[in-house]
Length: 398
Image (tube, rainbow, N blue to C red; front, side):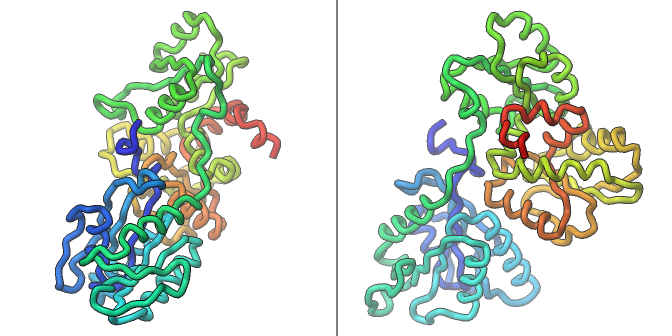
């Protein structure tokens, strides 16, 4: 997988924020060397966040986000500001664009307060340096730039790269669990809800890490797994299954072969496996009339046997025997008021970056609402959660 093929959720997210007509879009266009964002003297031209995948060396693959002005007026302005705040939840590095001629405004200070509250490293870029004589910036995270003349654009990129490199590396998916020469079996069911002509992102990513580790990957549907295992000359080091086939696969895979799921591997990669394991026990406390939130990070077309809206609710009701309510969210939307939910069951988050997933986990924790994910919940209801966590012995000890 080259840098240009890096999934968006795996890229460093760099958000450009500021007032309307501070020159955010012009600056983004200069940095990307493209007319990515519409530029106009008309106030409030940028109405929705604009995303662009690119590379900034030595940082590597990134996503540049141009946001609407943070000082918009009226009902539409409030919606734009709300969307800008949503972008903050996934921003790894923030660039505050300030109009050098007009100077720092109250809304700029409000944004800085939000960056600091959320722990986001930020840079203050004073734009329009071509219109005013400047001296050296006073603070290490400040710089004078011009989107017209290109002044200090290269230096700004270097500052962004340095800030991005401070981000802790995410946990691997599978590479630290296997060695060169190991045999790994990936179980990928193909049913009515599977995407046509491709396999889903977590399955692709796990397969790539297996190959990068110089291990041997075997792939089969759950219906063919028994035959595959019987024909293998070498016992697999690990079997990884799609969550929805957990029950069937666990009966096929011998107890002396470790078994886990793509969803559980992804939860560790995103940094919320421990909280997912703690939260899953709330399934035992579900009562009639409770409301459960099932949240997905993507906005795919729902199929008749979709896991989030059909299979998971069905399995929950069979397991608990309770008559509860289900609410769903997808994409960037995540319920603002979590207090009415008994628990939250989230997808693996393959389309969300780790900062967004940790934000959602923290929101649930702050409200005292247990949160788990698909793979953990399905393994728990099939009575095989602890077996599926054997690959993480430290977690079992807690």
